[in-house]
Amino acid sequence: MWRVFAVGCALTLGGLAYASAQPEVRVEPLNLAGTRNLQQQTASAAVRDYLESWQALTAAFAQNRAALLDRDFVGIARQRLGNTMQQQSELGLRTQYRDLGHDIRVVFYSPEGLSLELEDYVEYDIQLFDHGSSKGLQHMKAKYVVVMTPAETRWRIRVFQAEAQ
Amino acid sequence: MRGSRTALFTAMAIVAGQYAMAQSGASVFPAKLEAGSAFSAVFPGTGKATLYIVGPEGAVKRDVELGASTIFPIGSLYNAGHYLAFLAGGSANTTYEFDVVPASKPAELSFLARPSRLPVDMPGGITGALYVFDAYHNLITRQIPVHFELSGPSGEKQIHDESTRDGAAWTAMNSSPHQGVDKFSAEAGRVSSVRVIRQFPGDPCGLKMSASPSGDMLQLVTEPVRDCNGNAVPDGTVVTFTETYDGAESTVDVPLKRGIAQVEMPSHSGAMISVASGVVLGNQIRWER
Image (tube, rainbow over all chains, first blue to last red; front, top):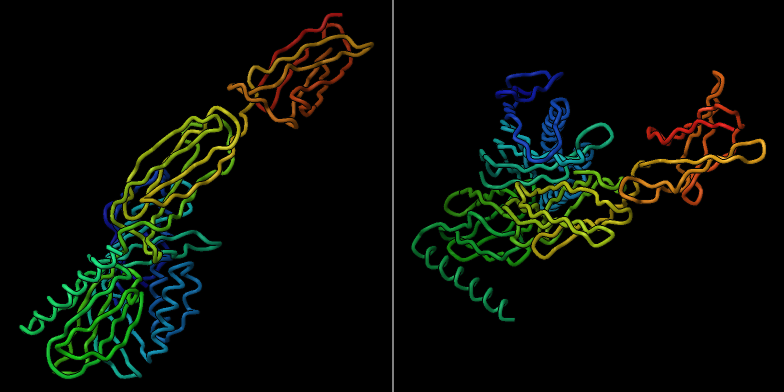
């Protein structure tokens, strides 16, 4: 599913299948703020769920179907992405994202264990369609700041915000 | 009033500057703008074109006049993120990348304090994690000073001044020696958030009983049961009396009532009687009639 390059004592994503057509994923060693010790299993699960959320995002934007986000996004993050898809639909727009690579580090794990923050240097292509006609394709690099909270069976994204690298 | 005038003049100056640059042929699109702020862009060329602004955070489509200033009013783009602008039509198709950054002033705090109840006098027992957002619910990732304060029931305070890192800050405080309600607050900018933490007495400390005859029975009564900080242990806490005599052991569990526990047990000369509450052992008495 992903090609993963773990660095130093980096996290491993057990149970994932890797294929060369998929984004390269690099997970940096932990450099945590917070008192709580982050177990490797917890970090791996959060990173795995985060990467899966990119697949959901890509699929949702390709079809302007916000419901595809429900498993992975919650709160303001879910609301924003849903609003964007609604805006796109109203304007006759569609955006096709192609996820190319991630360089992820966990930067904060809250002391009570109820939130975890990642930084991800993401590379992706974005192609814009207006009423089915392609208007352009652009290669993008952005730093994403992501806050995740644990739900019943997985980590879900509550803050999903990009900024300049 | 004065502030809005200043903002208006600033916006006019930006537009005038951009207009001058457009006339000279330079392309102008803001590389970075604050969430919710008004901005303008001048795209080189002549004629009409369509501007698309897209990203996971928002989508905009507008007809623009090339070479003229296109004004985006306050609130046009308020979700922080990395956007892509496509300009289609006119002399050439062009793309621009730019960032909408969070507003500088904190407007909302997400403050999680744990636990909501804990025993008194626990070092580092209370933790708080804070995320700082602007008025548009954007996480403010630049460093912001945060003031954490824990006020105990008798007025004592613990203060920790921290700074956010990547939008988050945290602290750990000690629970105070006195039972009651603590107010745990976090403040960033002029925004604050308060949580209530209840502190209950710790385990009994110096548990002590006395024995006296009561007819054929033995009356056992504890002194008022308190924790090591002098807080009364709550009624209902179970105290266990154990009598050992001639190789046999009998045990009675009694809940505290009005701060003490009392029970009657068979009176045997030479019996050993002990008292405990949970893992805390009290005194022992050898009963001689």
